[in-house]
Image (cartoon, rainbow, N blue to C red; front, top):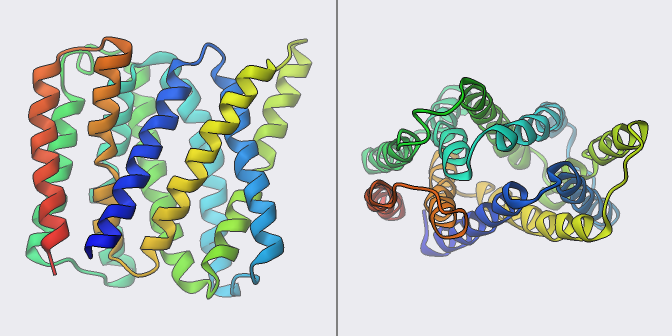
Length: 279
């Protein structure tokens, strides 16, 4: 992975951890997720107008990713309802890199160098260490189950989008339709809220739109880099965001222990360096 690709994916990792922290810290997470998905839809609509239609070969991947993203939003809501940021985020993001690397090898024959596989292993090990810190081990079974299922969803849509964006012949068009097809998510949340006689606070919605802007930028960067960099490597470096999320959990939400998280951060950083220098 080139230095420029590495810098882009690390920036995306920071954005991704930040918007997840905003969701976790919100008192009305459903409203924030409404804003997140609505921001995706708005950007998607603009891209659909501007960019060429993606090639038909990419639409099966687009369909798979869209459906899995619906499940992703539901699982994300329940995961943060039950678990901590430093608990849910490492577990859900931690299992994705290995699954994506293996899927890329099986589905499209994309193999990493030994150094690349060592980097994937180190990143995954560091993330796994974060996941078994005190708090994650004693977590309610529901939160762990939701986080694990969330991780499988992340691996599935990451692999589907990595393949789809390469087949699309129009990365911006692919991103546009992917974001636009999230339209049922804010509509479903608004309909459910209206049925229960509630409303969405304007400030919370604006916070969600800001988080959605970070989400769009982060995933757009990742999809762009996936169009030319190895899928497994991109996915692994992206998941270095768990270190950022762990620090946010410590500093913003007072989650502990901090020593284990620093040790895991060193392991993840070593994996990122291995991926950056692997041919």
